Image (tube, rainbow, N blue to C red; front, side, top):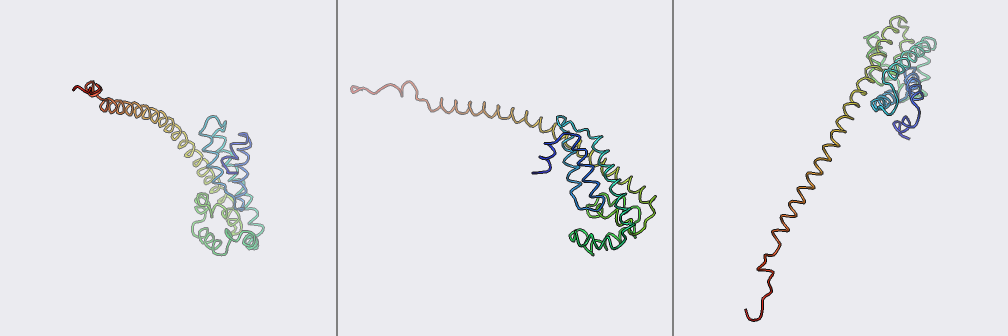
Length: 215
């Protein structure tokens, strides 16, 4: 079942919980489609019939991101590099040596900014928590960047998709009315053209008179 279809089939409370859980697990270091879930739910919130509040949705997504990253940080700090090796065995597509090395260079070069902007990049979003813990980044620095990044990413994504959905819905409604008007005009125009052609092809009274033998 498609993500959007599944979210449509569950109550609003379950949507909030699922968004927070998936984003939290992704932030913890498990490759999951957190952004897809958030975008789908935010798009649903723009449809008032869904009952999903965009503010509550953004708050749940932010909480999931911050808590998940913090748990990932704690696990990474305790597990160290053996944890990255274990994750590489479980998720080779995401935690390959090349990806780990790239993420590590980003953290060493940018520090807190890597945690903040990593929230907006799918690969770094998975790495941010565990890798910051493995590299023993001071927790207060990590938490500051983590909270700010979570608010900007989750809140910003929810707000943008929500307003895009509202505008799109308005345009679709206008388009539906416009389409109806255009269809009616085309129908009337077609009728007028057909009538004119029919009248033009209609035989005159003289043409309709039968020819007699004496003529």
